Length: 339
Image (cartoon, rainbow, N blue to C red; front, top):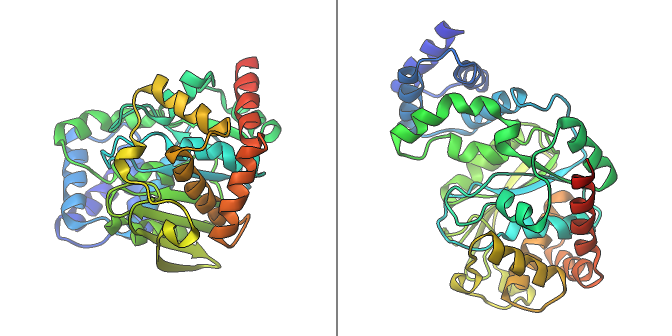
């Protein structure tokens, strides 16, 4: 394994691309705990300098997922999450949207973490709302089957990431691991919505999802500022369906939604963001709701529930106003704590 890694390291330092299998083997070695910190640092820095390609991202993501603490797939599921790293300080749009999607009948495997580049990560919000976030694999499966939504706490799902944390901190620059998170959901969902922090990543991540065998996916960047769909400017997207990746630009104003500047969607700590989420699920009409409705519509399209964003918007509004989204949250709180 070490000799294969050294060969891969040599290739990236020569600005050569790795195959998906080579990237898979390299990350498996890194996450084995046998790699020296100097080897890990050299590989990550060289890969960053060269620029990560779709097959390299896919190979490393596959290794990370296979080494997770979950040893079964739940492919009939959907994940909506972002890479983070946009420093927008927006509230938890995708986490709130997850309950609208679940209320619409989508099985949601929400993969996330505590705050890294924001004041409140998905795990922070859910904990504040009363959801138990650290679960055994058996209970993750039970929640998926009985509730239709479960949270997969990334540090518990990927314990081998401890082998790269010190090197990542020492490097002090974004590495491939900053974009791998959304691609490494241990339940291996067939369909995904992924937000990325810069538009240059949109197509490459969608191509990586294709290589990972996803059936349907939407990768989005909001106006080169937000790892969510934005209500203020163009959304740069790549859509995977039927084995083909199509790039597109989507503007929410085309669907009758209000234009809302990013500063109006600012969140705070977990306590403040939980109040925002509950205001939305209680049916309050506000700017936050508009953002969640739009992103939920994108999720409904990415999950295959609908093929039209306009229809997705109407579906999202109905799920909120009928109380179905709030019911999903309440059931998740109850069942996760019953364990």
